[in-house]
Length: 206
Ligand SMILES: Nc1ncnc2c1ncn2[C@@H]1O[C@H](COP(=O)(O)OP(=O)(O)O)[C@@H](O)[C@H]1O
Ligand SMILES: O=P(O)(O)OC[C@H]1O[C@H](OP(=O)(O)OP(=O)(O)O)[C@H](O)[C@@H]1O
Image (cartoon, rainbow, N blue to C red; front, side, top):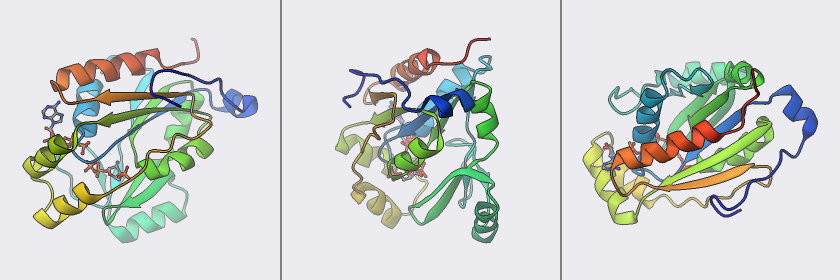
């Protein structure tokens, strides 16, 4: 599927009836601005009850100015994962990430749920959620390098590993929409695109 050129009807009507909300997966390389645009969009949509911004659980100390996530030890994360506390979980950059299982309730109420996930988790997301839309946020390589280095969250070795990470974006056949935001201008412009996409994503009426 090419970005923004095509949308598909949901493939499985039974699943759709059960969980009619859309899960919006925000993906893209390190430094593209996923957390930045998500934080700005969350602020812009603070009074929009039908759009839920997922709070991730990560085995990393939070830098509040970048992303408000919950922190868990590796042992607690593994226990939570085994007990079904996450609707989606994955490992990357030597860290473990999870999304709370309670998001299923928001989806079953017809809400749009938006989350920053791994490109490698898209197939799991397509299997788990009835309706999946994908927003790829990206920027030219030189911009990514400069941003990750300037962000100051990782050590120089970790910065190099993030920049070197190669991940193909494969859009699952079940995805209903695929958008790309080239975030190489003002963050405000990227935020406006993201907000427009989220407001247009299908929701159950009422
Ligand atoms: N449009 C933009 N213009 C300038 N700087 C940006 C823009 N978007 C993000 N940044 C900065 O780039 C860095 C990486 O952004 P971040 O949101 O952490 O990216 P990601 O979550 O995709 O890794 C942050 O320091 C952020 O402030
Ligand atoms: O498989 P990938 O698509 O490369 O994604 C790997 C991880 O990177 C991002 O996390 P995080 O926000 O910690 O990293 P980032 O801010 O550097 O993108 C993303 O949400 C995944 O958890």
